Length: 138
Image 1 (tube, rainbow, N blue to C red):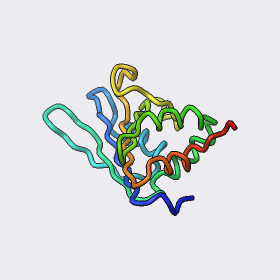
Image 2 (tube, rainbow, N blue to C red):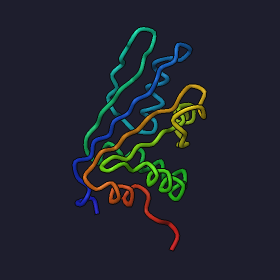
Image 3 (cartoon, helix red, strand yellow):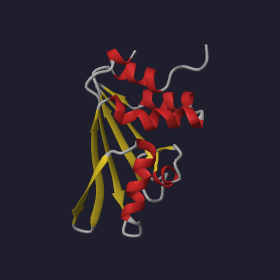
Image 4 (cartoon, rainbow, N blue to C red):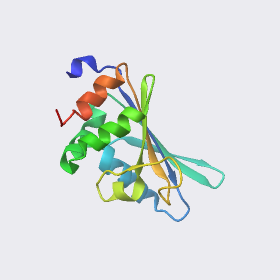
């Protein structure tokens, strides 16, 4: 199956609000996406982490969490809605991620501290979604 999933690149972006601890924001991302390297970018009073990782291995932690949380069907729906050509874009609740769980979020307004934006680019988004979130119902 994974042979049809190639050129996977995971990008993540998350705001660091003035009231937030940078380290906690970093931990939130790493608890759902593993050891993705994050760079802190500061522009005026705004700070955000931006990270990139290549390969299917970059999604291993997320893959495992989806199964542990038993949310494959819900996650599949969100991922399918997020497909834009060769990209899958979705948002995760930052506070929930910090405690090591997955909760999908809207880009604005739903999460008071702002969400974690995840963008996965690959040659075959449908195959990637099938790998991450196989159908659980017949």
